[in-house]
Amino acid sequence: MSEQIYHSDLLENDVIISSKGRETDIPASNTKKYYIESYGCQMNVSDSEIVAAVLNQSGFQGTDNEKEADLIFLNTCSIRDKAEQTVRNRLTQLNHLKKIKKGLVVGVLGCMAERLKSKLIDEEKLVDLVAGPDTYRDLPRMISDVDGGQKAVNVLLSREETYADIAPVRYSSNGVTGYISIMRGCDNMCAFCVVPFTRGRERSRPADTIVHEAKEMVAQGYKEVTLLGQNVDSYRWTENEKLKGKNLVDAKYEEGVINFSQLLEMVAKVSPSLRVRFSTSHPKDMSDDVLEVMGRYANICNYIHLPVQSGSSSVLDRMNRTYSREWYLNRIAAIRKHMPNCAISSDIIAGFCGETEAEHQETLSLMDEVVYDLNYMFFYSERPGTLAAKKFKDDIPEDVKKRRLEEIIAKQNQHALQRHKEQIGTKQIVLLEYTARRSDQQLVGRTDGNKKVVITKDRWNIGDYVEVEIADCTQVTLFGNVIRKIDL
Ligand code: SAH
Ligand code: SF4
Ligand code: F3S
Image 1 (tube, rainbow, N blue to C red):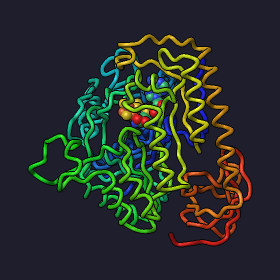
Image 2: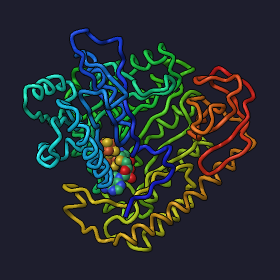
Image 3: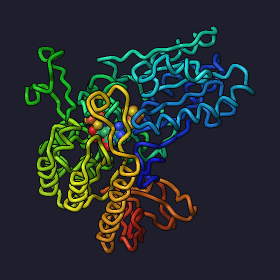
Image 4: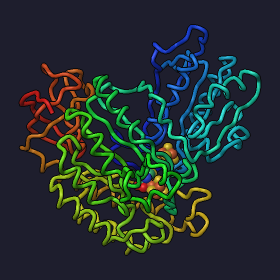
């Protein structure tokens, strides 16, 4: 059975991006070329930009052609079994390349490297190097070990590493939209989730370095930034020596602590023409302060990704999500109160351990109450070592998981169409991001609410903000006519 996913073109968790490093940073001494592929979430895409920066600093050269690469890195994801399977299949393909290209180095980075550690080298004979998400500064040394004929493994997790001082090489960027990681790791222990094991303890990056990076992006002509963290609402940073090393979650309102709402405001102030997005918010601690700041700044997009996972309080309890259906719906009401037109998306898992038919129906009824603009939907995939794997039986038969997921997807498709139809006749501010795949006479952008809009290219350019009247839609795309170019 293969997993089904919705909105494949917008998917956060299964993107693959190939790489090209910046050529200006290359000392003449090193002629080796590297190629990176990123799997998994936006965090991995952002991490690959750090990897490219570390490698460029050591004189390696990026390429977007795997055939001319001396080093191939896969930045991997472990979130579901299928994500790992995809990487294993890719490694099998690379075996062929390795046979014909003597000396080719294959490295596995990211979450799968962290989860499987040296087992990866035993299981996948062609892998030369295994580097966990907190070890990317060590890559040049690891590569030289491999050159010396050894296999290299570093999977140490850190409590401090945020790569705050490394300017990412945004190699796969359109030059218009980019990511800034504001924190790493996760201290929540959702029962189904492997991330706390692959990414380690939660830590926030110094606020001044985030603001600095946003300013750099503006200087380079970027128009939109997405602030990334597994749980952005628990961002906490202090320069106050007395508070350093203390649990900043409890110090939320103490003087000198910068929380997420304050950070968001600092980034929004960088430039009125830089749109700001963020992901992911956790329902247990998404605060009204954040909503209030969002409502106050025109350049903070009216869009929140607030994953619910299940509409049933008993399932949420087993999932250890630490909120109930009622709490979640109260957060939705708070969003609507501050921003009546705010777009909302979610993640949903079908068929978690012990899920009854009645509990599944509660997920469907919650979807009816919220009417999400967008949803990322999965069926439960047991991950070794997680709380759920230890505590519960993965007891929902595959055909039942699949049927429930299909019901969830069918409902979401109706809701997405409904939300899109509501946009027809409205005027939206769209940031143009790339040329349409189907026609070079069309450009694609997104509304403030993160909806994809296709327009006729005409005299408009990638990177323009344009006012668009929405004329038509499908459940995945809006179509519109540009009225005029605007300054944000
Ligand atoms: N930090 C984010 C989620 C990161 S993982 C949050 O807390 O919402 C992205 C999504 O993958 C999760 O929201 C969840 O819906 C899904 N997911 C995680 N573990 C899974 C598993 N074992 N099986 C199926 N889906 C899973
Ligand atoms: Fe995983 Fe939960 Fe952390 Fe999200 S908040 S990364 S789902 S443990
Ligand atoms: Fe992201 Fe996958 Fe790791 S979703 S954090 S790359 S397990």
